[in-house]
Image 1 (cartoon, rainbow, N blue to C red):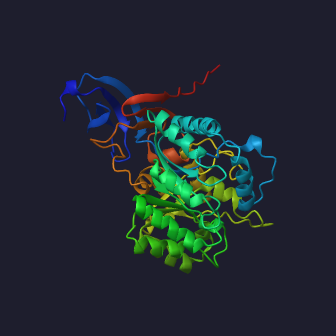
Image 2 (tube, helix red, strand yellow):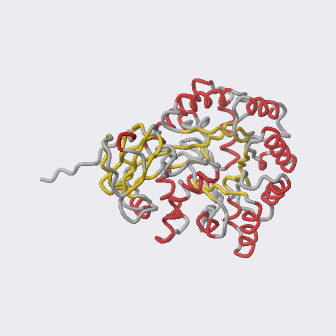
Image 3 (cartoon, rainbow, N blue to C red):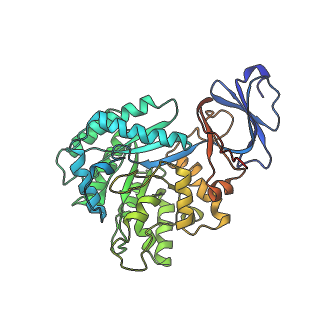
Length: 411
């Protein structure tokens, strides 16, 4: 334990998910230096009063470049294809300043909702060029004081069928792209699409995060090719697939086989409740399917999973406030999670997406960055069940926001 004079800040009476009783968290130089029931020191004190402290939420899949577009769309977005076409038309007019302003709005909402780590997908193609990428690079730089932002570059409208897209992807990877994505269902040659994405991933030594199988027809899918490519290239633990809604349409025996395949190949799954629930099953006249893959059940069977935001107020998802706590609660409701599974639902927006993104320094542990958010509840179960306020947040030991608790005025 460091001497009392070495601590800059101490959080008193913090409830951690890993401890049965409240503890103190000591911070020095922006990192957690000590965790103990009662730290003796002379540092600045913040008394959490038995409230839950988390290392911040981790949003493993969001689209900052196409957020907050509803005011520009005079379109009835009745399907995934409609949404893609609507945004395709809009993004031709995107400017760096425009993308930056909309992305900043979402990032600031995410910060005050307790998010400390984020991976944003950025569309790269001949329509938008690198303008969205340049804007998001600037957001990464300008908001580093509150949030670690990772950039995943990807071709939303295909690759082999979109001349010029591959060259732009390469340019983005050479200029700060940290992850590469793909969208095989939008390509006329999905297998070659996936092969090219994995080729680039290996060439630039970056992880892969794909949009995959975004419908409810289980008669075909690209999941097997993703698993095959992952194993062939020894990329286990470096590949994620987003949506994967077909998994929700499989009968039990096929789902079990798919689960085993995912676990064996080390391919992670990100479920995006707001978008999946909104776009899937729209052609049904009754008994509408949810289209929501049961991530918490996949986790029990050894598949790494996360729950994330995806889109905020655009043709794909006309809702959103960038709150991952709300998303986890929405997921728990729609996925029929039991009370004993609420802890896993919280894992899906904290520890598990941190693993998916291969973050080595995430968590409230000695030596890790002092990234701490405080919820107005005293347990992980309460976080999902109650949707409590996120009262304050710290990044590297510096306070980045605070929310006042509501006051009831009795007569």
